[in-house]
Image 1 (cartoon, rainbow, N blue to C red):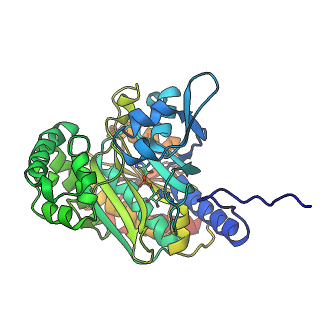
Image 2 (tube, rainbow, N blue to C red):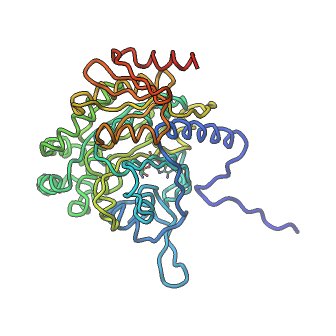
Length: 419
Ligand code: HAM
């Protein structure tokens, strides 16, 4: 008698054949795109202290309260198979003293994650994500760059019928005041809410926006919106992010009811969905997490990032091949940095769409610091952006000329051909 055959556990799968090729192509593309934008690879352990997720992701979230695979390590300590990558990346940032490096520190990963969910198409118990985190700068250009890179990755993977929803959660302080308003609204309409939402009025009232329950949806139609209660600095940050996305020509919808299932978010919040997918339409999501590093025991450090589900990208798109390129253009901000930031960002996007490997200043550095940054990246050209023009510096030839802003990309491309 032969031994009974064993199968992979429910909600898990083997990666073989076409799937493996498609994933290699995706990985090559992510590496080229993110590497050219200054992101370095990070891989953290598959399991971590359970406390990391309890503190980082939040006790009241579905992920921590019911979806974690946790186990005892044999000496009474609780370990958990990582359900997501942001908290581990911040743990590593702190553990390796990365705040001493040039900021922001940009890290990306392609790893598998584990959540005890009900398996269905596009939802698994072990799944893969490609993720990118930029830690150490609260510059809205970091947000815009991060979102734009993700949009490019999804486009290059041929993900169809993509939609981007964008919102801002503001600071936890402003949110505290708003929470009370929302809780009062929920309590006043308690009898019309689903049981689940009612049970979470105290702990996590914002999740009520996510409910499919008809009564709850009705109540939420007249609920106060967080976007109407942000403070001036948060509103300004959000306007800057939108201005840069506009400058990049990226389409999005501001959705004040957007909520995500992780507690660490502050300010910018976003989600990419694809209408080509079924019920599990979320392809990617992310946002800012300006308090997370501090919550995990590090110095106060802002952060911004996203993760995209690889199975969902492959379900909604097509894989192709891609080759890596070195950094060709660094875009520095001239004297009036704030005034020229959008123009600089538009130049960054134009340079990238012309096929150049380009990066822009994101760390609020002095001009000298920016040139140091460009040199450390090995950039061949630096464009120091002013209003309508740029000083284009050839780092190799040590020459510099002032040119109209809209000719920078052409000038870099031309000298490239002359090499
Ligand atoms: P998340 O929205 O929980 O965010 O997951 C990101 C993506 O992972 C989702 O949009 C989806 O494509 C995929 N995903 C999540 N759960 C599953 C599942 N059970 N099966 C298949 N795919 C799944 C995060 O994980 C955050 N760490 C993102 C982030 C990074 N925020 C800031 N930095």
